[in-house]
Image (cartoon, rainbow, N blue to C red; front, side, top):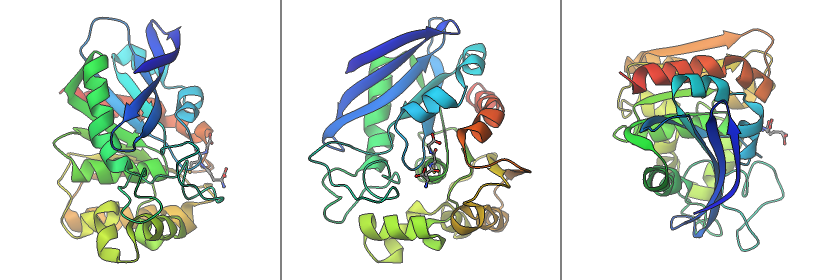
Length: 277
Ligand SMILES: N[C@@H](CCC(=O)N[C@@H](CS)C(=O)NCC(=O)O)C(=O)O
């Protein structure tokens, strides 16, 4: 592991980190906020959306003041493997910056795009080995593509994650153009292979292990609301599954980090209540 930059803030430390991932077979970048004190600390992992690196959340969400008050570590990984030898696409919604938190099975993506294993294994292993983290108290949150990642990884790995929330998540990749394009490229044309990476389907089919509550915030001025995100599908599926979902719709808020910054404290509080319970 290399720490490429480090800053003190709100009594804690923010580290920009690079490490080698066995899953992606590339170096991976992330940021790690550690609050003041000895630890071990509960951890929130944040999964970002399309086009993001680890820096978008780190620089724009305004999360660290509250995290420092709560004694919460925050880990923000990159959204995909990157580099010259890594497959890419000219479009912003496929390839580098758009890993969708799945393990690709299709060429040319399968060689490096193993983001599901990266987040649920390599990233957690790094945090456990190198930082004062309490790995029995890890929560997962994210935005848009990262909201989809947070929901589906929490549903598929409930033994790893104690709490889950999302901002403007892609609720059902099977039903939207971003999801259909990425899942076809990474997992192939069979919808069967997509199902475990679709939060609404997973819930509706009774295959998601329950959380006591899932918190989702959605801006009503989000340009992707109707065409890509479709939170009503998550709402319907949660009803069918008997999963408590708090879906808050916010008049006038868009898809940006201004929206995330406005409600991030509520998510940090939500996770801390569950991680410290
Ligand atoms: N077409 C847009 C879509 C990308 C987008 O809105 N990305 C969101 C996540 S889905 C984001 O967080 N962008 C980076 C930022 O706002 O800092 C673009 O290329 O900018």
